[in-house]
Image 1 (tube, rainbow, N blue to C red):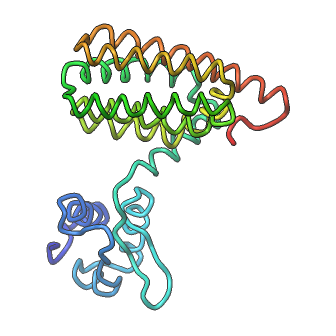
Image 2 (cartoon, rainbow, N blue to C red):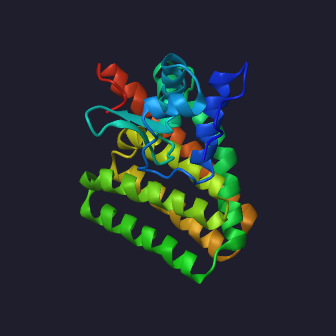
Length: 249
């Protein structure tokens, strides 16, 4: 799986690169354990200190998890967006990324996602989107108390559009933003039946444009939806700060 030794003069980086390559090409799968530090040290002919530092970097990048105990060791993690999300969340907390930054990013990405979905959606895709519309309508009929469930449905709707677009990069990035960042603000932004109804209308319009294969209309509606949502988000954030509470629940 690995070379017998690390390349001289760049032992540390070569060790990291070899382990990372084995993870990324599937030789090492989620749940697999790396050999013991002793065995790795012998295989790479390097010191324990260098090996531990390389493992620390891999752990920091979210590729492995160091488990303690007799049966512990370096375990390969499933690749997710969690590590990137944590960094983005930290940037938001320190106001390096604002609501406007997120909205600008989402307008570009989600507008294009909706346009691609309009060009590529089939009957099954449309049925899935309409199911979200029906679920969202049921939430509104049940009253404003269902806004958390509405937020979950809204996130699923956007991620499904990304999936329909056919580009896995869109889905991966938007899943990070929606599920791990914007979900915190959905609860502020969507708290009110009138706001739920407006968002539902936006969702219906986007689905109609997708069904008509009108890419430009779908893009325009998705971008408008993001702009309006950003306004709700900022208002909810400011009201929350006025009440002396943290905006992230």
